[in-house]
Structure formats: C-alpha cells, structure tokens
Amino acid sequence: METTGFESTLDMRSGHSVPEKQRIAVAAVNLLDEAESLFLDEGYTPYLVAEKLLVHPQNLTIVTASLQIAGLLAAGSGHTVLLLGGLVRGTTLATVEHWAIGMLRDFNFNVAIVGANGISREGGLTTPDPRVAAVKAAALQASQRRIFVGIHTKFGVTSFCRFGDVEDLEAIVTETALPPREANMLSALGPKVIRT
Image (cartoon, rainbow, N blue to C red; front, side, top):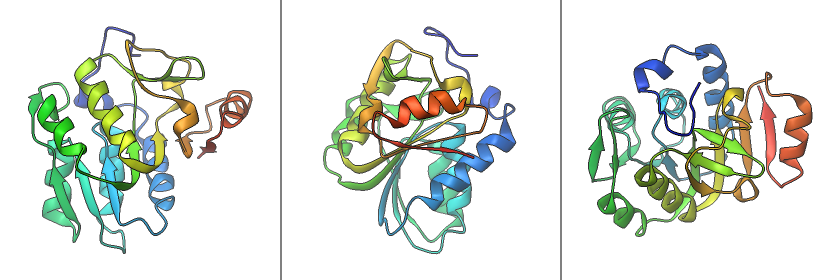
C-alpha cells in the first residue's frame, strides 16, 4: 500500500490486482466516445489503457509523459503519439519538470485519463512528488473531459501533493471492491462512478 512518502515502482504495480486493472482499462476506453485527442497518464493502469487502445477503431492523437506508453503505442498502433519532454523519473519512466509542463500548455485535449496515488473527497487527487503533480495538474487543466482510473486501495488515501479535485472529474472508473456507499458519496460531488 502506498503512503504519503512512498511511491511504488511500475514493476511492483504490475503484479498487483491485474484482472481488476484490466477491467478498469476496458471501461475507461469505452468512455472515449468520439474523442480525437487524449492525454494518457503515467502508471500501470494507464499502461493497460494503452494496450486496449492498440485495437481502438478510431485514430487518436495521444500525448503521454510515459516512455513505456509512448513506445507501446508508437510501435503498435495507428495513433499519433507525442511524448512530453523533460527529466525522466527512474521509478516510473515518465517525464517531469518545466519541459513537460511547457508542452502541455500548448495543447487542448478532448479527454485526460489520469491515475493518482490517492483520491479522497476531502483531499482530492494526490501524489507524493510535486513534479509529477505539476504535470498531472497541467494535463487536467488542458482537458475538456477528465477520467480517473484506479483500484479501490487508492480511495480514502491522501498523499503529499494535490493536483486536482473530485468535482473536476467527469468519471471515476474503479472496481467493485469500492464500497457502494463511498461510490455514492463521490458521485454526489459530480462524477459518474463506474465500478467494474
């Protein structure tokens, strides 16, 4: 479990709750509708979203900070893929710092699909690293629609840096282990909560 000061590596995340994350990824892709442009966040669940996009019938322009996601999509899909520049973090192989944020200021996305280390009604969307939070915040600001993807263990967790609010989300996609009561309280703030 992640705490305020600890962030797991991609290798650690890829061995945990994989069937649940696969279902979340499918449900998130189903929400894209007629989107033409997409910001796809770093992380293992967004990586699974990218795998589903390999067979997505509509060509998209996809922007990501994740080297792994960019490589997967650039090699195996008909999508246009843009990788944000910047300092590469060793734990997640994703770019951060002012280069990435500067690029995001020039884009307008139809949809952003983001993850977080924690999501709560009071604390919003959070992550331990201020550099990561700044990239995520810039991506959310540049997006018309915002979708959160994450398993139930992310809920009720507040990490160090807030980058968004539950109220800003169009949808929260998670799994059935999130209690219905918590899902209802989150949906009362505005987003549709999908438990898959």
